[in-house]
Length: 492
Image 1 (cartoon, rainbow, N blue to C red):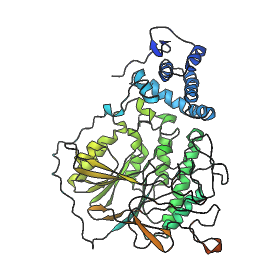
Image 2: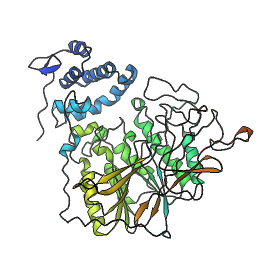
Image 3: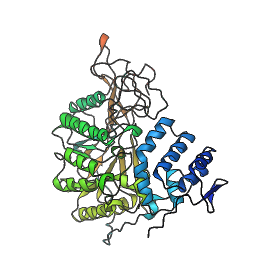
Image 4: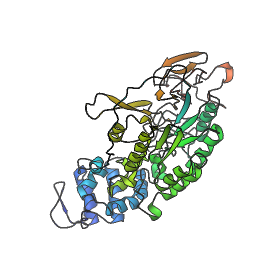
């Protein structure tokens, strides 16, 4: 049952703790706030329910703790405060749990996973079957895996990339090794090169379209990013089918994904409906229906193979709307169990984004998992719940297209064979005519500091830009890497 919300200003500050009855006015609170102890900040935040006052206090906390410059703190609080207070007021959590979520363990304790309660089917789990590699002659399909494009709509070539803000605006013509996202012409250049690469059969696109200037964004900005980048993929990759997933940066404010029972202007309907409209050429009507409702969907790729795209924002600790209730928002996990159970009965394989317990139960059904968000080219292993020693699944995490922070742009293209996902050799050129075989990483490449027509074309003097050119025999995890606009010796 929901717990009663505390009355406003029912505590007094004593030695960094909320204690007893009484009240403090705003001047006293701001004075106490300036003393700087994190538990004191938590206490001050716990005692308030007035939206304007909470906004001022939160901006002061952000500034006092040096989380960001004052202007960024104020803009971020203004963007977040209405939705945050709405979630706070409807929350079933105690004040200390809310404060633990917002500020950290010095203030209280909150565990997002403690309330999950997913019912697994009574059907016994099939005995594990060791995977059998297909014969070399088995047909293959190449998957293009794109994630974290992070288009910076305010990117200004030639500006100073060193700043105090979380994102700078914004560096060299093609990009910058710094706190920088990418200009649109760089993203389009990537897609142009991919269109000339050996053919792909399908595309995974795991979200995070807008830049990291989250304190400056509006719904109009996010919708412009969605429609512009969707149009670019359609222009350069058509007629390939593209299967998207929702990233945490698509919302305004960032990470703010209310459950479906939050209606009206604070709901995510503006985003999900825009996604369904933009992606209707890629997804069938049943998938568009659940996408419009809650941001997730499933579809059959071909007989025996099913795709599940989950809205992982419903399990994110950064999603403040989970303050209301973190127990399976939108019923997504229970829906996933039903999808996987039906797939198991029909002997379909599923590619999905999901949780450990479900992965363990349906290890014989899930062929692979594909993730974005971390910006890093890596993989994660899942092990059986009983011994934690037998691998049951693998999650492939693609490198980001954006350079944020100080990264090479990247994409991956695993080669798929019937019955398994095959990871083979990675090949890319560090110099034209010379290829190197590596394993799931990019090496240092130096590009000169100028703005060419194409960062991977020959420039004046006949010297090549040593950028990635996918050879015809290349398979799996092809890295598109060229640190543009970098002085010699700074590539990494």
